[in-house]
Length: 201
Ligand code: ADP
Ligand code: MG
Image (tube, rainbow, N blue to C red; front, top):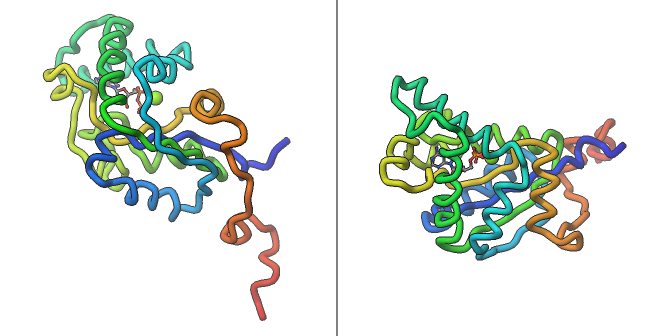
């Protein structure tokens, strides 16, 4: 079995983050928690590639539709539809426009609990209700209500894999095997070495 420090997750810096010059800020947050960057590139995806990315997980349509309905109801508002799949059909159309509006930066970050740690730093899907201190909570102010009212995707700066299984499929979708690099990062010794040997002169 591979060591937990080898867990990987896929992150996409979306067009709005790139246009708002937040690339360095976002990368800095993943660096400072101790994750290791093992792949990165700038890509201009087409709509079919974006649709394939979001539908890699066969449950995504249902789960995302249900999440949207729940969020409306929690705020005492009426969702655009009661049918999760109808909601996701329009979300997907809007996502294709959003994600192809400018280049995106795609990265693979590695480390213990990489998937959950990155999701924690990224925050919830809707910036209005994302926690303060998260990327989506600190740098953007969109909501389901405003984005649905304007028939566009919710602008939340970043994509991050939702589970280890999702990460594996997404990494394979965006990267060829040889594009991921295995290397030692000096800080890995401090994060993971059992004995912290060799620090004293
Ligand atoms: P997350 O990115 O947090 O994993 P989802 O996988 O549920 O969220 O949705 C993918 C992306 O689709 C979101 O990041 C967001 O940009 C967009 N999106 C999701 N739900 C809605 C919605 N109800 N209205 C507009 N855009 C949405
Ligand atoms: Mg998701």
